[in-house]
Amino acid sequence: MIRLDGSSLSSADVTDIVGGNHDVYLDDACREAVDRSRRAVEEIVASGRPAYGINTGFGDLVRVAIPDSDLKDLQSNLVRSHACGIGDEMPPGEVLGMMAIRANSLVNGHSGIRWSTIESLVAMIRSGIAPVVPRIGSLGASGDLAPLSHMALGLMGEGTVNVRNHGEWRKENAKSALNKAGIEPLVLEAKEGLSLINGTSQMCLWISLAEQRMSGLMAAAEVALALSIEGAHASTTPFHERLHQARPHPGQRKVASQMRYLLSDSPNLTSHKDCEKVQDAYSFRCSPQVLGAIQESLDRVRSTISIELNSTTDNPLIFTESGETEVISGGNFHGEILGMVSDDLHLAVHEISSISERRIAKLLDPATTGLTAFLAADPGLNSGLMILQYAAAASVAEIRARIGPATATNIVVSAQQEDHVSMGATASWMLLQSVENCAAVIAAEMIAASEALSYRSEDVGPNLMPHLEKIRDAAPLNPNDSRRDESIAAITPLILQGCFI
Image 1 (tube, helix red, strand yellow):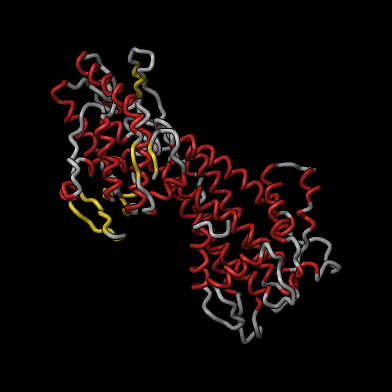
Image 2 (spheres, rainbow, N blue to C red):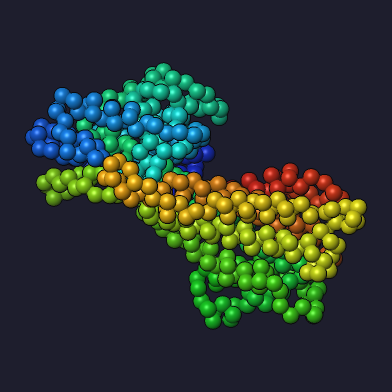
């Protein structure tokens, strides 16, 4: 059960909703605040005093007064005109996640929307009815206007929706799907269209998914590093606790501690403790400093997401707590903070994949390992894992080409009224794509380390062995030339699902 109460929604909850592992419900304790802000909107309409988005035009049309008789049309016209997305459809599960984020923002009671409207939105989630939403259209300021307009259009019974039926999705006319689920198509009242579409829900969805997958990615990167150290017969000295106490960045210390745990009591490492190696390459030796910096970026993102998921992000906001109504216009819809942390985490994803690819190259190099070239059974006749590194390098190149920063690509819109936008949706979506690329690189490193360890006479330590067995179950050892794409495809989902945490 996932409760929407405006204060406790997490990125893990969002991921569960996207995956269909959910039963979403509204917390009735929120209803009083929602009803109070709705009454304030109705009083403003009755008074005739101008208030942005309630009885005026939108954006640069803010000075146009709208008569009471046209207020319903004003809201439905807003949704229809703004439903102008392009490109591929968002996956239906992601649309449901976006809808849940929007509903959770609205229950805070600052949006002036009816409780029954939020109930209808949640009823669609519970029924597995996801409006068709084109992916592209948000500039990350004035909220995610285009995608959320497509969402609101489905709530109005217009357009096309995807309906989940026994785990499968099928397309259906929106009005028909709502009627079958017993949900009345919505007729928008004053302020409601703006409240539904003016928020950060799409970008917040994507960065939530990226953060959850990144958690699995970070854990897998540490496992891959430990296996590579074992496979390359590298040194454990760079993880010494005193070394990291001398430079006590929290992420660095956390990674070093995890490496000491994974590599402890390893007969394989003990077998070469008196070797002639003095220092390893940076991709091994400096890994706590690199992965530690990435860990701290991830921790910052978690804090940002926790706040954003439980914030009110539309405009204007309505405050009634003092006993008097205040309608305050501002910019809580602006996604700058989400865009910037997405760009920051995107750089972190690049660094994970880049240093991992460098370790793959080392594992395939006899000068590093003392093993056969490319870990081939018969070098020359066999190519071994030569092209595994090529695939990893190509994935790193894609991440590098996509890295942005998206927030630096401001484009002025709405007759220069909206003259600085965040591109937060672009930043978070590109981050999500690169997380998947990075998982494939880590999978390739795991395969290379697993094959290198097959040439060693001793086993890895007891804390690392379960991870190695999991990898070999998904990608069995094979000393001969064989397809490795299937092995990467088998391990990558395990990484993204957090199976190495």
